Structures are given as structure tokens and as C-alpha cells.
Amino acid sequence: MATAPLIHEYGPFFDQARQHRVIFYYVGYFSQNIIAAMAEAVKLQLEVSGVDGPTRRKLFSSFIEMAQNIIHYSSDALTPRSQNERELRHGSVCILEHDDGHLLLCANPVESGVAEELRHKLDTLRQMTLAEIKQAYKDTLRGEPPEGSKGAGMGLLTMARDARGPLVFDFQRIEGRDDTTVFCLKAVI
Amino acid sequence: MENLYIAPTPSTPEVDFKFDQHRLGLRGESYPENAAAFYGDVIPPLRTYLAGCVDQPIELHIALAYFNSSSTKMLFNLIEALSGAVDARGNRVSVHWFHDEEDDTMLEFGAELRDDFPLIDFVLQPVHSG
Image (spheres, rainbow over the protein chains, first blue to last red):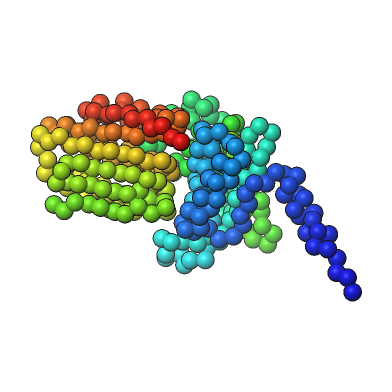
């Protein structure tokens, strides 16, 4: 008995990816090692796609910031709470070609309290001009890092500074859960 | 004190602080999982070394192809520590900032460090790639 060709079952999925001009997509657990490997793949992909140097650097930078934010803030962790290095946390990241630029998308679950903080930060950022963003970047550089931050709280500022246009974000409630929300972020580079 | 050497990894830089020769080097990529922890092994020994330097010429070479947002803060702190050593004990610090000639972000950051720390002799060194 003949089986339906794979293309019938999976064609639509691959077609979608092609239509959206996906050049990189990963969904799963993120760790520092996994990010380093993805960084290599992304670098290569961008070089081969003929993207110019300055844009490649900005894309790479925002990609790393997004991926590391997943390790730091995703509420879906494989490693125990008490472990705060070599962590493994779940999320997704996607790079798409778009008009004359690229879209960077990422998504991960976050604790609802964290969601509120993020919303506040991103709302503030949306209303800032590029000059104000650059100034906020300089000010944060010189200030004290936020408590509990593994970095300096400058990831979003870095992305906002490099993106064309304000960062776009969204929070999706998860059915049946009040403590967790899915955070989605889009940057156009 | 003993020289400080940390071997590079795909996401952390080579740290080659030859304290005995007063030549310090930072080279590679910097996007550690926890920048505060990584540079927490670098900046305190640097401070200890600087505390013992008086009227000394000190040279730091920085050649980082990329550093993430949290490394940026740590680098700032590192340069600040060097600047403090000029101010307090008359050391002469020069920082050579190597950057890809096409990389505006790197150039700008180097220029900002130079403007923020006038006590340090900052040398911007564009590098031709390819």
C-alpha cells in the first residue's frame, strides 16, 4: 500500500517557513554552550546570505542578547532553581528576512511578576527617541547593576539602540495558568 | 604577584595580564553566561596589582571582536579601575583599543571610553579585516 509522500504531510510546514523567509529557527532548551554553537551557525548563515558587515554585527548582537535573556529569564528551567550557572531554560528564537532588513523574534515563558517589569521597561523604551535611548544606555553603563541581574540590565537598551524602529512585544496568557505568561519580542534590524 | 592568564573559550576572552611586565591583554569574544562572575575573577586581581603600582607605565591591549551588554558594564569598570590608578599614584596608563575598521559600534564605544577617562592615554587602532 502506498504511503502519502512526506511532502503532503510536512510540505505546508516547510512552505510556511519558506514564505516567511526563515533563515534560522530554534525552539528548545537554551544553555551557554547551545548559544555559542548557534552563534557560529548564525554568523555563517549571515555571511553566506551576503548581509553587510555592520548589519551582521547588529543582528548577531541582538541575537545573543535575546538568547541570553532566555537563559536568564525563562520560567521553564531544566536546571534547579538553586543552580545559577550552566543553566538550561526553554524558549525559541527565529531570524527572518524581511523587505530590506531582517526580523528577530523570540519567545519564552516568564513569571507573571517578571512580565509586569518587562512590560514597564519596554513601554518606557517605546516612547524614547534614539538619542534618549543612547543616553539611557550611557547612564546605565555608569550606574550600579540591578539586583539579581547576571548582567547589567542593558540587554533591552542594546537591542533598542540597534533596531530600526521601536521593539515590538506581546504577552500571551497561558490557559489555566496565572503565574506564567509567554513573552514575545520582535526587533527589526 | 603572579601573572593572570585565563584561556579563551568560544564565548569568553583570553585574559593575559603579565603583571611583571606591566603589559595586559584582553582578546577574543566576550559573552559569558554571567559577566559579573567572569570579570569577578579578572577585576579584583587587577585592582590588587594596581594598588602596588606607583609611577609605572602600564599598557593594556583590548582586541575584542564582540562583547555582550553585560560585558560592556564590566569593561567599563575595568577601565575605571585603571583610571583610578593614574589618579591615585601617578601611573601612566595607555589602552590600545583594537577594532574592526568597519565596526561603528566598537569604534563608538572606544571613543566613549576615551572621552570618559581623560587620564588614560587611549589609542584607537582600526584593524583591516579580510
